[in-house]
Amino acid sequence: MSTTKVYSLHGKGLKLNTKEDIEPYLSELKGIPDVEEIHIGGNTLGAPACQALADVLKNLKSLKIANFADIFTGRLIDEIPTAIGALTDALIHSSTLREIDLSDNAFGPRCAPSLVPFLSQNTHFSILKLSNNGLGPEGSIIIAQALEQNASAARRHRVTGPRMMASVDPTDNQPSVSATSGHFKTNFRVFHCGRNRLQHESMAAWGKTFAAHGGLQEVRLYQNGIFEPGFPELIAGLSSCPDLKYLDLQDNTISEQGSSAIAKALPSWPNLETLNLSECYLTTKGSSKIFTVLKTGSNTKLTTLQLQYSEIGEKALVILAEAILDHLPNLTSLSINGNIANPEGKAILEITDALEEHGHGDALDELDEMEEPEEEEEREEEAERRLDEVGEDDKTLKAKLKKGAEDKSVDELANLLGKSTLS
Image (cartoon, rainbow, N blue to C red):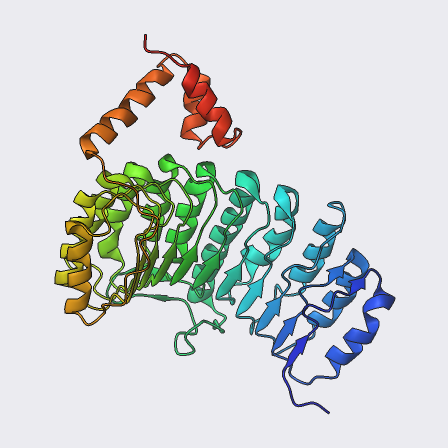
């Protein structure tokens, strides 16, 4: 009999509709003693097959990783809530589970309630991957609130038991209160939730959730249509996670307000190693605030800084160069392509020199798509003029702008702006 502790059907392209369809594979699974990992992505499962699998999952006493990514391709939305609910409900009482991956399944907001029992009750898992599910703000608020309830449950368990298991760090196997920061920390360490249209409406809920857990080390919220007003509450919540090492906010609209929130929070993350703010419309003003804080030595462990296509001008890049020289000795990967600077100008030269001073001359990524610098004051005046053209009385258009134009394409929004005139 095989001694492996991993069972995988990954990528086999199986269509398992019924209990009978999945039974041969369940027999294989049951034949593996003390299985620790199960990977069934790249297949499509119907509700009856999921229920049959769930009956087996309930009896797996050593399961650490449950990979259920991409298992509903071609399925009707009506059957997915029952199917995913069966799988996750089966793991509610699993005390060994460390990681669950539910990515690349077309849940939509309709399926979010099916995840609530597991997400609110199992306080043992440390890693949750929930990307590309089409949750939208409605579904994501449901998920966030379930995870906030999870933190409350962890607090109760810390006081009354049982002992918590399966954190990322095997020496940190129960919720705790940091002796240095005073923050309560559950077992929740890693959260991936990209491409889910979280938008700024759900950020208050996520801010509360992250603050409640306190021990997050990695958060990835890329491509979520989060607009500037949502970031203060989101980042305030993350500032209660002093162990944060990896933060990915790529392809959201952070702008000046969000940049201010990040700048304020940076000293709360002394262990930060990776910060991805590419395609976030930081602007020169916004990014200058972030770089000015980095210049104080708040994040000396930073190794990767991604800032591509974020409307950053040379004035801000000069401040970044100073931050690198003075306080970023470990920076080995820097991406600033697509911003506004002369690749052979002063700002880039100072950045290159600063990196070379620390022995990281190869850290700077390619600069083949940099924009030609303009007078930054002119750019800022033009941006303000365009906003003025919208008109203070056009409440509908202003609301759409604040929401990141979520209901309109860029071209449609541009047309609307083009029709506006100065009063």
